Length: 103
Image (cartoon, rainbow, N blue to C red; front, side, top):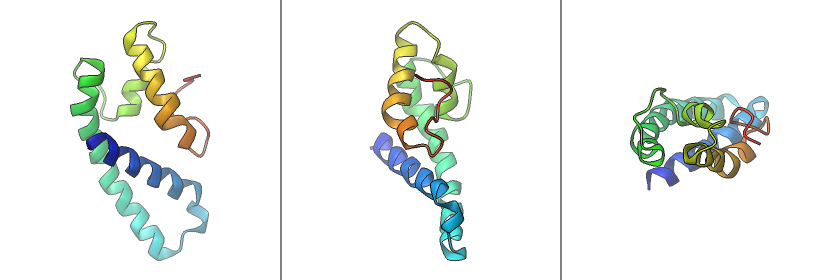
């Protein structure tokens, strides 16, 4: 459930980022609230599920930073990082890539 809620929140924030110039003041207020909720949610996700996915305690606050650290790893942690970046993060970032060089 935490994965689903965090990912849906990420999708919302990326959509808000993509449309930031179109946001009305009312929408901008709610967008900032999404960020205020999103960062702690990402930290909690990284601490709990990220620890399970990578079998290590986090060295960084956010899950993407953990994935970035493992992208060049040829082992299973690198495969996990590339999986998350390729399937759940990069395709939905307005820049086209959310993780560092995940392709």
